[in-house]
Image 1 (cartoon, rainbow, N blue to C red):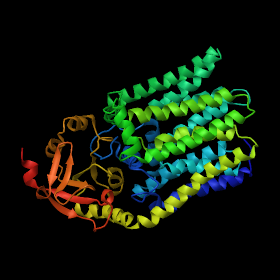
Image 2 (image 1 turned 90 degrees about the vertical axis):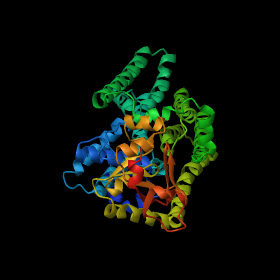
Image 3 (image 1 turned 30 degrees about the horizontal axis):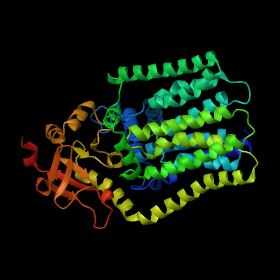
Length: 476
């Protein structure tokens, strides 16, 4: 990899990038249409609670395992260091985002061959939402691929070490390594094949051991929730392409564009290691296909490792044919341009909802006592992090296995009554029905409105805070 400037300039640029979250935290964390997803706040709040309150919990009360271990451990380390100086949640979040952007910068620096490639690599970690585990996963995959798998020099066995951490980041990411290792099996390089899969197996064992030791079981509550729809293949495809998460159709188009470019670059390349390039592509394709078939909620960040790998192949096998070079630049830099334009449009069109959301989480503190709990389904990550209250995650992804049983049997109303949860936040209510979710049915007669948005806000961003009436809570 060529260095286009002296290292000191990259060090300075890295420092500037690390400072950005502290200067633009409100822009980054705006809701809706900020750079962070609701799941990003789950990680941030759990890491904060582990570091500050010594409890693996999103709401500060119930212990959860609904996260990917190694990424949360990394964020917990950052929060623990920050705690030496302050407990301010905004500074903690800024530090975590700074750490994330440093990973994006590392990918750009180590795998980009020129300024153009480095700019694209960096933005790729931002375009598909920030602060999720898949960017760290992509970094480790690229380390293994670039330094060992397609190493132009002698293979460096030290770069087999990243394989060990991959199952701890995402257990399903073993797919990538398993497929890539088949190259060595086909070439009858059995020693390398065995070595790679042994390290991967040790990582899987470490993941299982850590889950069992820390939480008492080997599967997370979030994986159990998602597994409910695992075999509803037709329904999953429909939801991912044309349902509420139909944004994935756009992501698939982007993915297909990069796939096409990667194939063209490999076919036209003079690089002798074409079969390795195709194996990288196949690994990325299979990962995306499996998730779209078995998961009815494939979100932005699931595509990050695959698109990073496609991009790596494009740049690794690129050559001087003008038309192909033009296509590479047009697609890669065009994606950045479209992202910047969209972000600018969202900034203007979502100004009112953004201001309301920010005001809403501040007002909660003056209404709900610190010892009280609040129940919320959609948007609970954002509200839970900034409200500094015990906010119960209603969709169950970062709740407990016991809560999952209430969900499965549509008994959330019993859960609310048993735990005497007096407050509820929802962004999807009508004039008559406040919430209708998994057995929890509340009407205007059952609650007292405490905070209501101004008229005209988009339905899914118009948060309302309600207090459940005592008569409902004590009614068997």
